[in-house]
Image (cartoon, rainbow, N blue to C red):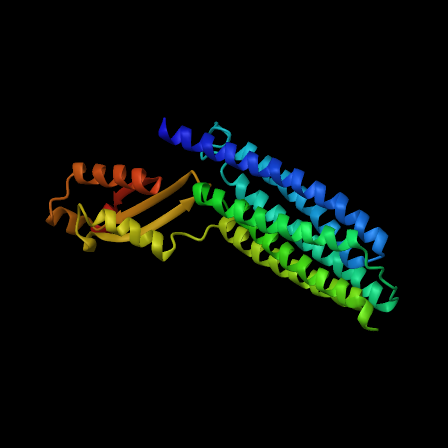
Length: 295
């Protein structure tokens, strides 16, 4: 019942962030697109395109949490939790696509510079964008403390990079009337580099989760602390972690038969270890002896 409640809570939090992200980014697309057209700025228009991709990212996140929340079935005995990782990967690819698109537009503007018209609407649109993205990043971080999702982490990183990118764009737009440099094109390249960097970082993180990285040192240490409360540390030969999603992680603990026999480690101790790992780390543990190697 507790596990089912956690899954439902995770599903609701994920869907909620997806809907909020879609609404906020759609509003920013409209505001920034209007400001970009009126000021003839490719940097602002590129920022609007970036927000449009963020809408797609939020929609993908919504779908991801919807699918990952489904129960196990015959075809998917380990559940659908990895859909979160797949969606995180898709979000990362959308970010990279946006960065490439912005870079192409910026290079064109460098080759054919155009005068930028600085308007109050353009400045206001960018300020609103900066504040919105900072608030969204803070909100994502707060919610992610509850569910530890790679998707929300990717979206939070994207929001922070968006805030920085928009701040740089605003500074450049305000400086444009005082220089003959092709500020718009230069800023576009800076914006694209920042977007590509955040996309590549997020892509790497999610790819590692999909391929399977095993137990990190901190998690392994937490498992060992629980195990050694019941059996000697020397009895543990190997710890391997299989990640089928944030709410479905399986840990296999290989024990040395001779040492556990010597210390009279009974099934009750092993049962206590499994229960404590499940309760504290939310993992299903399997403890076993490699009897064949002892023969």
